[in-house]
Image 1 (cartoon, one colour):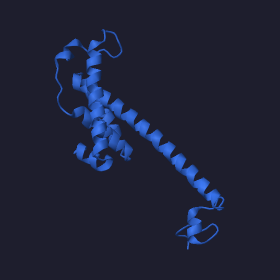
Image 2 (cartoon, rainbow, N blue to C red):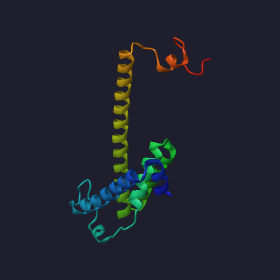
Image 3 (cartoon, rainbow, N blue to C red):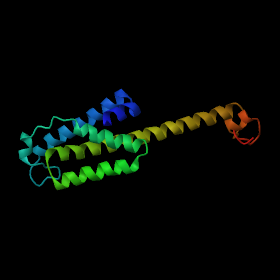
Image 4 (cartoon, rainbow, N blue to C red):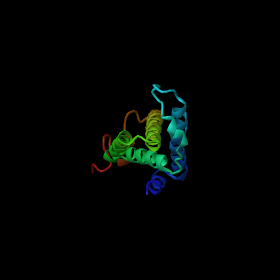
Length: 157
């Protein structure tokens, strides 16, 4: 279900990119963590080197967080984070640590998406203001011009 909802909301390419990124970071973190010496912040037990995690669970966790937060389901996003964290704390196994890496990856992708959206909105606003100034409309809104009044907004009549 997570892949279906992600594909419908993000599109197939973004779903694949996000899912792959979350899985790849989870796998790379597992290999990196096992190679760290004991006492290192990111150290994982050497026994995890023998564990094979072949499921798409890291992609599901990452997509679940990204889609739920991006489309306003904040409680669902919080639930994904809290439940994943609780399961990793209560039953520390390799998959849990991979899921935590997927959550960090999804959060970073959300941050990058938010920054890109804000920059695009600023550019669009600047272009609109420049177009209004070039056409002599000053600060009047486009809606006011369409509605036919100096300060009128669509729906005011």
